[in-house]
Image 1: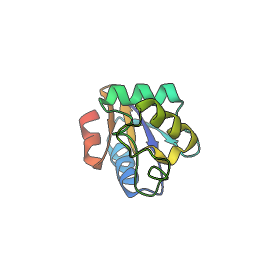
Image 2 (image 1 turned 45 degrees about the horizontal axis):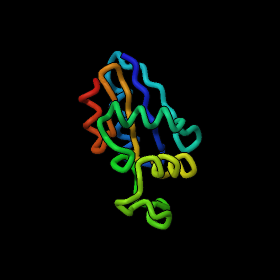
Image 3 (image 1 turned 45 degrees about the vertical axis):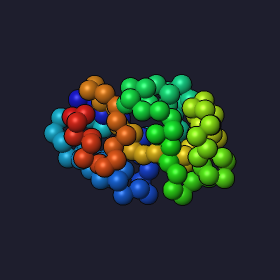
Image 4 (image 1 turned 90 degrees about the vertical axis):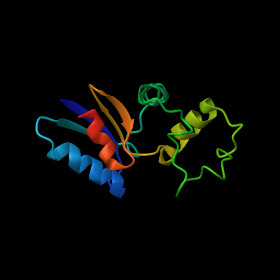
Length: 116
């Protein structure tokens, strides 16, 4: 099985999720450090759709400029949030994992097991 993780090595949850993937027999893992190589806007939008979440639900708040950018206002559109994520990839909550079984925002890390 192939798995892709959009990963931040400084994040404990992301590291734990990656460890689960690497420790699972038969899983071929592709690691993308999204702060260095962010997904395109269209790719991120598609990942969220496959995960069944909105860009707002996929937005990281802690340790990001979300509040100062006004993104916590409920009136801000998903398109505006996606645009901000392109300018500030730190706004993308991690880790996102994709396998043949689907896509999930793996918080907590054990959610990745549903994709294996």
